Image 1: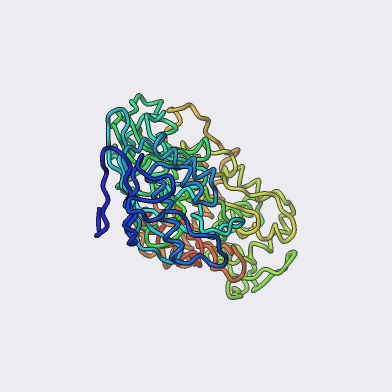
Image 2 (image 1 turned 135 degrees about the vertical axis):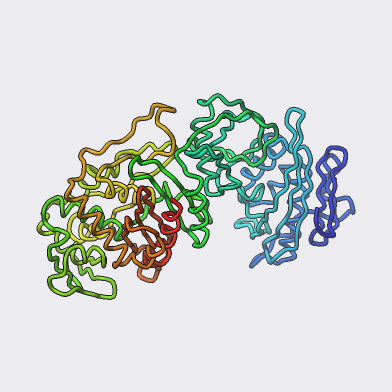
Length: 546
């Protein structure tokens, strides 16, 4: 334990030194007085009823009493010092009985207003095996709504910082044996080396651990709230015998993806192989730990114009080399305009409108299309969007619902009710690249016999040729040229996007998708601005590793 304040474990019982903030009070299991006094005779009960903001002194006093009761294993007393007694009592009781904590030292830090940090140093003992567990957490003291007393604002993270709502700390023999996940070339993939894969690896273990012949050991884990969510291992007590699970990931591309998203907050990226649909990399850099790369659902902005352009060309309404009017603004239900109200000279081609991301050139085609279901049909029938993809772990399908009026115009440019994630958009780019939809896969469907989605029809060869050409133009002289300049080779294409979410004052989400040879990638940075500013460099770095 660091610092001047020290604690110890004596005789196999809990011992907490509640003195990191200068209290100097010990609490021992089986040796705490019923009147709430500690070893030194100093009271450890909470402050009296009051009103107004909780003072730092009262916060420290309440935290001291709670931590002492928790360390003493007295869940009833600890629970009464919180604003959610039922949940706190269960969690504090489970800390000993279901997490198999045999010894613990809890050391408070210096309060910062009503926030009190503390350190837990524990030992987990299960069937004769003992392993240490140490972590930092914190609690906040608030005034009780009805009692008026300072109380610990109960959150699961008080027990462990990684616990979220309705999650529990558990230890024992897990139901699913461990797996040794390897990439397409046999290189081992670990959460330590590839942090973004932690949740992915947990899900792979849950889904395939019992299918691949491994043997379970003993662990401490976080039991998720949702039944279909994977357990998150915190500590291995007894090593199991893992089986090898081959994935389609590529360690080199994954490493590049991890490094790329680390440069931007709230960033996600996916890379796929167009010729097969195999997922080469999945990476996220998010505060909430959510796998937005595969499970997000946000408007994709102008990256959706890949699908819209394919639909318009499919119906013979536009052609890459034919003129397409691009005025500053156009009205369809409401007024839509281009970024900074730019326009293009008369006679400019549709390919130029695509490369410059002209919104009005696309929206002006709604009347000639005269079919509210045209865009959803193209998305599903050609690009496989919404066909219940079974990748090997949880993923969210893109949605392109039918729309009319202004809502339909918004969908043509990737706004409105359309939702996508980087996996969906990377697959759209892969389909554009080859003309054939290959459902994205993280592991082979032969492992569990799951059914793979297939699109109703191939993209017309002429449409594919034009679409690839327009994406190449975008990458070399359009809105994506800055980000794609670093991508080597001539066989490269891209599309930028920015999606307005959260109101006019919010910065738009940054979207970018591109291909280089047989790699397609898409990235999204929430609030990252225009596509080439944040998401673009991420995709470029991933493509260069492919």
